[in-house]
Length: 99
Image (tube, rainbow, N blue to C red; front, side):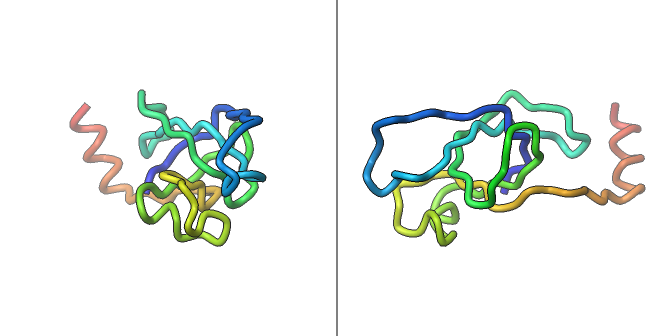
C-alpha cells in the first residue's frame, strides 16, 4: 500500500470502455510525517477522494479487488481516505536521532 496525497485529476474523454465512468486522480507519495516524496501514481478513485486528501492506494493485482475495479485494466486504486496516523513515540524518536 502507498500513503499519498491527491494532487490533481486526469481528464480523459476517450478510454477503454471498461473504464468509462472511472475517475482518475494523481497521487503523490508521502512519508509518515506527510512530507512529499518524488514518486506519484495515477489511480482510479473507488472512495470519492478529492484533491488535497491523504489516501491509501493499492497497486498491481490488488488494485483490481474493489467493486469498481474488478476485472478492469487498472494498476492503482485509491481504496481509503486517511483520517489520521498514529505513530509510536519510540519510532518517532528513532527517526529524529537518525536525522
